[in-house]
Length: 336
Image 1 (tube, rainbow, N blue to C red):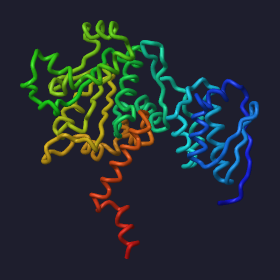
Image 2 (image 1 turned 90 degrees about the vertical axis):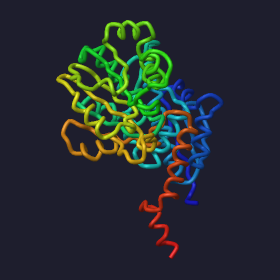
Image 3 (image 1 turned 135 degrees about the vertical axis):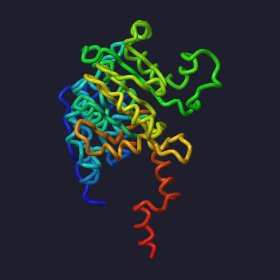
C-alpha cells in the first residue's frame, strides 16, 4: 500500500451531487469498492481518503461524473462502471467529448445518445462515411444506434427511405417451413429491427411510413437486383451473410445512400464450410476511403452489468480452448 492521502472534490451544485450519489448512495459505494477508497460527503464537498493513486482515480471519476450530471446526463451504475474503466485506462479526458451529441429523439421524447467513447466513435463514423461496419458483442448498441441514425437522417430529409435487412440464416434462407404469408414469416427474425423503429417513431408513425414504402424491413434475399438510391440501409446480423451475399449487398449502393453493416463475429450461425461475409468484408475493405470499420468491445456494453461479465467470461474461455492466441504463448514461456 502506498502512502495514504486525502483529496477533496467540490460540486458546484447540490443537485449534481445528489445525482452522482444515486439512490441509497449506490454509485459512491461502487466507486469505493472498485478503487478501494472511502468517500465522505460534507455539504457540497466530497472527501476521498485512500492510497495516493486510488484517491487520485476516485477524484477523477467523481469530477467526470459531476460534469456529466451538470449537463443533465443520468448517472446510473453502467455510467459509473464505464467511467471507472476510462479512469483506470487513463482515458478520462474523453468524457468531455461524450454526452453532447443527441443522435435522435424517441417517440416518447427521450434523447438517444452514445453512452461510451466507442459508441461515440461509431456514431461519428456513420455521419462521416458512406459505409460503416460496426462489429462488436451483444449489447453494444450497434443496431439501435444505427436505426437512430437512420431515423435522424430520414427526419432531416437527407434520405427518402430507410431499409432494414437481415440474412435469414437462422430460419434457413428459404423460410419455407414457417407458417403464414411472407410478412408473417419474415417478422420473427426481423423483430429486433422493428422494436428499435417502434421506439424511435411510435407504432402509428411507423405503420404510416411502412405503408407508404418509406420504411422497408425485409430479408437480405429481397435486395437482389435492386439499386438503392437516397436510402439509409442497415444490414444487421451481418456475420451470417456469406461472402457472395455481402458482395451482392454492398454493390446495391446507389447515389445519396448511406449503409451501416452491423454484426458480431463471435456469433456465426453459418455452416462450417462457409466464410462469414462480415469477417471477409472487414479484411477486404480495411483501407478503402469512405468506409469506416468500428470495433466495439465489452467496454461498450450498455446492457445489464452481468452482460458485460458474461461476454468477458466467454472471451476468457475461448482463449483457453484456443491456445494459438498470443496471450497464451507467453504464459507457456513463463511456465518453462
